Amino acid sequence: MSVSRYLVEESSSMPKRVKMGVPLVLGFSDKNKLGTIQPHNDALVVTLRIGGYNKKRVMIDRGSGAEIMYPNLYKGLNLKPENLTAYSSPLVSFEGKMVIPKGQIRLLVQTGSDVVEVDFIVVDAFSPYTTTMGRPWLHTQGAVSSTLHQKVKYPSGGQVLEILRSQSSARQCLVAAIEHRLEAEISATTENNL
Image (cartoon, rainbow, N blue to C red; front, side, top):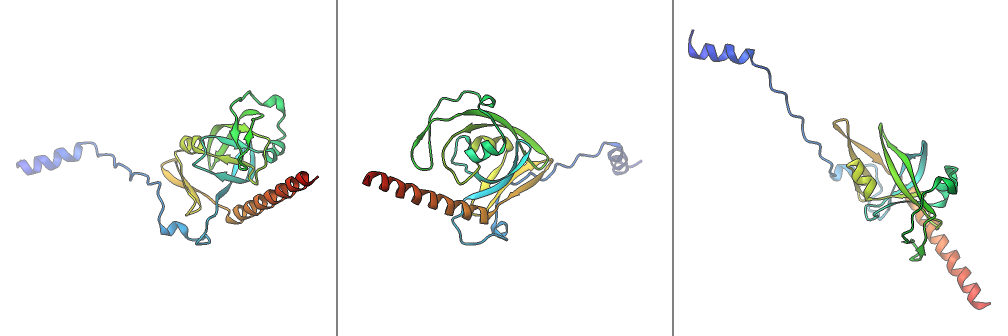
């Protein structure tokens, strides 16, 4: 038996190496802009399954250090004050006002087949959004978001999945915020003139 034949026979009896998968890339390219209205300055607004219900007008804000729940979602989920736990740190609203939270609640949030528990701070303040999902949720999901590409990407089961946006909802929320601000300014002017 030659040496080369021996090496071939021995290597065929050795276990095969497991192929390492291609590492998941959570990034964006110009291809990811397809289907979006460009150019734009829209917020990233999606639909998420929160507390067992599909909820629209969810703003993804990686600048937020907390998940914030606004009155529409609180009422829509039929939550009661007894469902809340204490949360005493004040927050600053979109309008720049100090807001004292009503409390905090932990709910399940589902993306695809992945479900995570999320602590929402419940506030009684105007917002055109039902909730704001911030860095804690993004980090728990291992997700990255892009307002430019209007997507959230996250790893799940060895693949990269996407949560798609609703630019029309983002624009409707912007209009609602502007209308609310105008109404508040008119109301304040009226009160000052009385």
